[in-house]
Length: 72
Image (cartoon, rainbow, N blue to C red; front, side, top):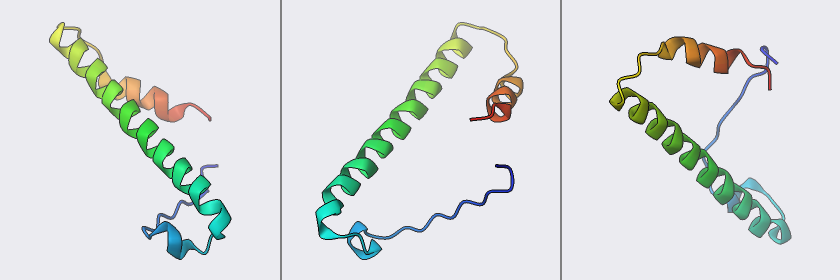
């Protein structure tokens, strides 16, 4: 999947051409995805700041590299 390309286009849900009957489900999916992404980032940030406050010395670059190298 290293060759896969991602394209992001910001637009309103109504202009995507989705059928009216599916728009509510799409809006719920987008809202849920945004919620999960935001809270995952906030939790990761809290953990990092908490560990730094406790004085733990860890190699952040190594931890990030391990996460990036995992194949999902």
